[in-house]
Amino acid sequence: MDKLAVELLTLIFSYACTDGGQTGCALSLVSRRIRDASRPARFHSVSLTTSPAQVQPFLDCYEKERAHSRDMLPRVRHLCLSLFGQGLDLPSPQACPLASSPAPPPPPKSRAEFLASLQRRTQHWRSAQETLDEQYSRVIPALIRAVAPDVHTIALIQLQWRSASLVRCYFPVLRELTLAGGDPSFLPFAFLPTDRPLYPALRRLHHILAWVNRDVDFTQWAVHAPNVTHLRVSRIDAHPHITAATLDQVLSDAHHDEYFPHLRRAMIEPHPAPPPEARMSTAHLIFRDFLVYVDELAGRARVPVKVLPPFRPPRLAPADRTRRPHQLCVRRVKKEWLERVVDGDGCWQEGMHGEADVPLESAPGPGRQFAVGC
Image (cartoon, rainbow, N blue to C red; front, side):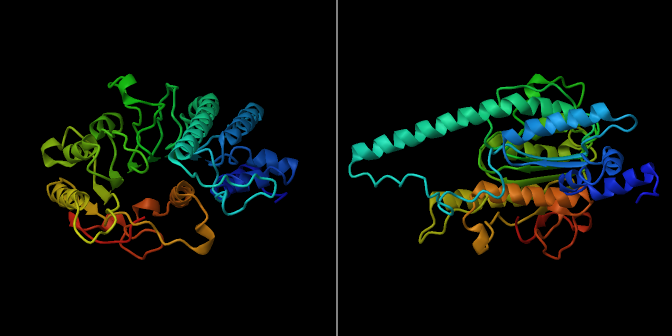
């Protein structure tokens, strides 16, 4: 290592720093020479999934390292960002009760006690949500502006943060984007000019419509990401109507030149089915009709569309049963993001999570084909 040229070491480190930041942190502690040689590569991939308190120290370190760089600036090429406010490895409170924590209150004995306890929980949630919103609003705009010019892939889980901030920036080299929870709330299309695409280099777009029913207008995405070649929509439902309707519109052969002219493949994963009942309910009828609609949408699309079976919650290992649902969502999105950092299949694999299946590039024509959902 001591005899290798600095330029060669930097190249080697860029291939090593693909795990979200752990290798980059370790390299900075080896020696002064290794720290200096690895500086341009240490921020190659960055994962921030724990809390708002994790973002500001990262920004301080990133700006400090860029200020110390003489030749090649450190750049964030791959970013995984969760705005849930809780990390991947925090079990639920029932899994690790603290010895010093107060005993849970007894169950309410009357309707008045029940309503009072419900009001206390609501107030506690509202206070915690406002604190979380304030913390993220202080750091997320600066983070997005810092990485936007250079980032190649982003996985954003933004289901819990209610943004009151608008970030004015563009992503000139962003190639792949995964969004869980709808469009970025800090980059609304309504406030952007239509003559300058927000994502001019974007090739792969994955929307995970989980947890919240936010409208996603794919005609707006066609304006701001005109060069998309691969589109995936996961957990899509009949409501909100604009999401399914605009997806049908951009995939239709009648709008070949107007929306996503370079689109080559699409994948659709419907929302989970209603719980089984002895008799078919209205919810089951609506869900059945929606599956028929999705099949018809795929049949009239101008590109091959892979219709996956409705989302099925995975069977949890014993170690995962104490985790909150959002923690499993963050972990899954991060896993697929890491695979894409090293040019793996990620969410674009037909059979998800290790299933040996045909890659998307070799997918046959439109229609429903069953595979394991994510």
